[in-house]
Length: 489
Image (cartoon, rainbow, N blue to C red; front, side, top):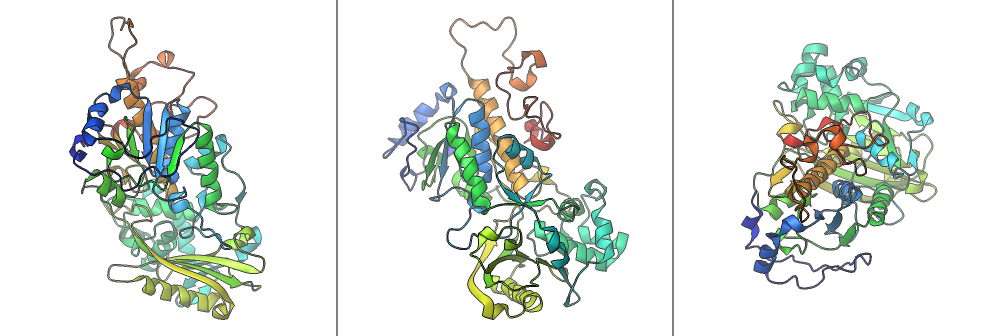
């Protein structure tokens, strides 16, 4: 995409209203004539600055990755606080936007731990395992069909990409098991018809969600604590953070150089004026509920008759609500033509079954509908590689949970954030001018990934080529996170 196509766009609808005092070169107020900005952009090969638009998990990951390589980074966030969908609500009930969990075997777990950013993490209490309930056949049961556990042990690589999950599992274990397994996996899908999605895509999420011991971990105090630690780390690395700033045009940016757009695809589509930035997502009714505590309340209710999940988050983290209160969060996907009320009605039926007297115990309640804010899903015949590419051309890169990067839920944001930063750093390296008198010694300048190991700069390992003390089990030289080939991002 040629960024010059945006030259007729108007300036940002908001000035840089929040100023990071670390950088006394902060740009404020009027950014000057757009034509002057375009002329200066022509000299972008002299810059060492990377701009990140969006302060959620993907944007913070990209900013940290770039800043660790020594370049100057500016991050813009339209909201007055950072975090994106990982933002934790203020008030006595510390809710996230829907049920959130951090998978301990995912790539971002090791990345955060190496940087001391994990902080306090809560695990599902062992005593709560006996309070896991499954809604099947109109009643709550203590166990799911045995076939679901057997299926969850199958590696995702055994599942076909071109066949839908319902068809594949029905041939293996029958339609009842297929339906129950698809609905159980919906906790990591947020889609109203998970059985219609690619078998390989759903199987990976079923295997992760049903892992024993459980992979799920919960940042104590809510996900906002985690993103606050990431923001603090970015600040300490010198990242200039501007909040309450909405960027409506790349030409409104005072900085020049690579730009990482770490927003939803909807926002990226408007910002880049690229109608091709689309992918299938879900629509999910979200219900947050605070009730007075009662002994015997379930820990989790998983709906196997239809996609849905209800979880008592104070079971693992009592700090999320005042003493004597329990915080429940649920997500209930809704299909085309359905409303949030349809999903909430299903949630209330589960509450009637599992939480006696919940209406009289309710002290706080919130409902919402998440559309296009629950991550990408892959239909039969597609994989993550078919989603919108990270590299949009002309120094513009995408990051987020709907782009071409592997992983489950927030792992896609993390992986794409690292990949986008890696590609932006490569662009700076390729466009960096020679110092006066510097000779090429009979060869063309090589890109970092083309150099032999002995030619690499050991003092500044790139995010796609981590140093020995940083290299995780899935990180290999020359590729991005979890084996993502940056040449095809």
